[in-house]
Structure formats: C-alpha cells, structure tokens
Length: 192
Image 1 (cartoon, rainbow, N blue to C red):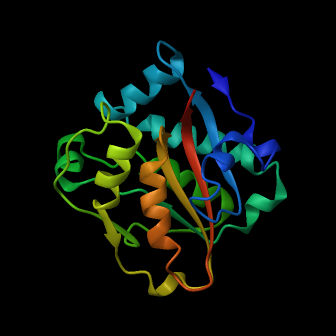
Image 2: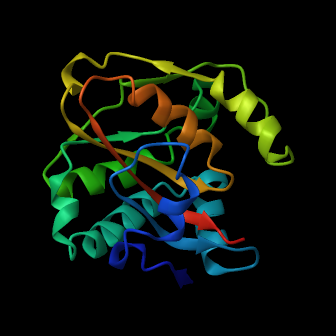
C-alpha cells in the first residue's frame, strides 16, 4: 500500500486538486489508489464483497495519522458522502459511514448523515470522462437538514477521489451554509 502522507503538508495533492473548485481549510487522502495493489483489493472488498469492517479499519488508521497534526482537532462535524438507496439496499450499508464514524470518534466530533441527500437514480460513473461525470454528479446531490451546521468546521468524507466531481458537488452544497469552514478526507486518492 502507498500512503500519501497528506497530513504532513497541507499543500498536498488532495488539497491542490480542489484549488479553484472549493474553499478548503484542510484536505487529506490516506492512501494512493492504484490498480493491482492491496489498496484496490481492500476497497473492492469494502464496496463489492460485504466487508464493511474495512471502512472502520481505514477510518481508525487515518484518524490516528491526522491526530498527529493538531489542526485536525478543530473539526466539529463529519459528513459522509451519501449513496443512493438502491445501492445501500443491495450493499446493506454506506461504505463511507464506518470511516466517517471513526474520524468523528477520534476528533470528538458529531457525525451528520442528514446534511446531504442523494437522488436514487444512478448509473455507474467509472467509464465516464471528467466533464461528463461533473455534469451528471452535480445533479445527484441536494441539501438535507443543515440548520445545526451554521458556523461549524465540517469534514466531508468519501472513499475514493478520482476526478473530484463527487466531493466538489457535495462541497458546493455545504459551502452554502452560513459561516462554515470546510475540510475533506478520503480513504484513497486515485494515483495519476
């Protein structure tokens, strides 16, 4: 597995990916996602082979590295990217929830699964290009109940960042909440 060491440098690859797209305070991906690696197998086990424990395991491990940098202790609320109900019913869980829960626990923060909502219709984005993904993905998400989040430091979390379209769509929704600060974390960043 290849670790990013994002927590050591706030001007890291994950942070730079969203410059000009989102106003982030901090950003960190734990691992680099590459084909034919242990990271790919672990994420596939999580998403396609009912191994929900991977989510908790990676969340706990990533949290322990982030806590070595004091600024990560400023997080108030962790928000996992939602998945559509059909996928959740098939899988039985949101693959990001355990990761979000472990980060919230480590940061002594709240977890909010109602701030972002996902429309049910969806087709796989894997084979689509960056611009096609951005257009389609931005229409999949909408705000939920965000009243309690005003003035908070929010941590948006996802499993894999490839083009950044999902994080961008969700982040833009959260940026509409008054006086928030926004940071992000992911299990893995697709290696370029």
